[in-house]
Image 1 (cartoon, rainbow, N blue to C red):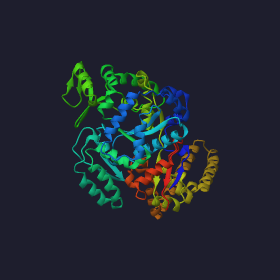
Image 2: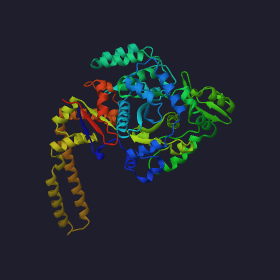
Image 3: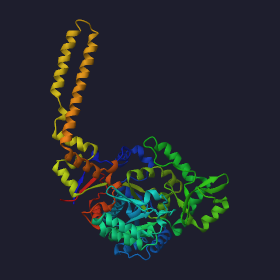
Image 4: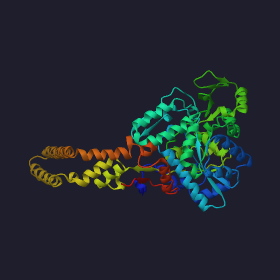
Length: 526
């Protein structure tokens, strides 16, 4: 595959706020700990403390979570390395989207694998292990139960509710058989995805098998935060959240400062916890002196909920603002990598981390990719559209028309001549009555408007004669920016038929550059 990097100015996914962060703007320094640089990571290593006890709990938990799954040798090695005090994790996180969801889920993972490899080469006194945090407790079924093969939405309609990772996989055999019939070019890949799900008790296990298949040889560790053992190490923050609304207070205070630079993505709740149980995940709310569970009749006194926490910490599930703290307390983590929106909400959390005396990780903005198949490449070559002109996609058609027609100079000389003619008329009419100047100006504007109308007519005729070209230009735009979002945020890996999923993941890792934030375009060669 060919690889191209767009210029920073043409990189579509970076906001001005994130640009300032990546460029080290000192005004933003209060929102994070160490900078997203090699030097920042070195400092983070010195600050991160993680006990032998916590390493042992982590190791045992992972062995249980991986039980029944064939482990590639690099995974076995990294699991054991986690017991070493000089081993640190490089983490990204995401929900177990059905069939992995949009491609950026795999791009995230490729990023932490490449960064871990780079750090292992440069900082040889330490070990760095890539970790995918699978947030299986997420219960937003409508967000997670579908994926897209190109622009075709494939949805798994199920009556199951609660944490999506706990959904059982019964009945999926027919579902996958139907997909294979619709997309015969991907039948083999759909088959192994299907096999992983059908051999699993739930979605989370199926996702673990898929990701392990794609990235296990790269040593990726997959951890599910839905764990009683891990949440035992998070009991104190859970209790303080229940008793003192600690997240609400600290995030609200930080949001006031952050809002001067960017709109805070997430609003904190008074209690940022869910009650998690079989087929059930609902918010905990404080109602007077009692804790109520939203959309249910469940309620607790203070003593009752504290008893539940002591006996069953796994029943408490942190929301999007509290989960990062949980993650950093149960992992020897020094770097968290994510997309622009994800990294932005982490900037809301520095005060919360300070409160619990937990080192705030280095925040790295993952790479972003667009994949170009041979058909789209052919169109680009045919119409001589350079890669650097593909963003914004709204300009692809305009670029081609301007390059191949003279509409941008349409009747330009005639416009100049008319303006001069009306200037002479104005000079004549003003001798008789200066009020006639207004009439002359009005007529001039009408005439110039007529030329604009002529241009539109001529352009319409040209477009009618070049419909096939314009259709191809639209096809380019719809492939690169489907429904006006980045391709990686919509298309599943099954959209790319010219390469196997394993080869695709290798290419993502190969072309990832952890400290280069320009958008990457990968071309399948014709």
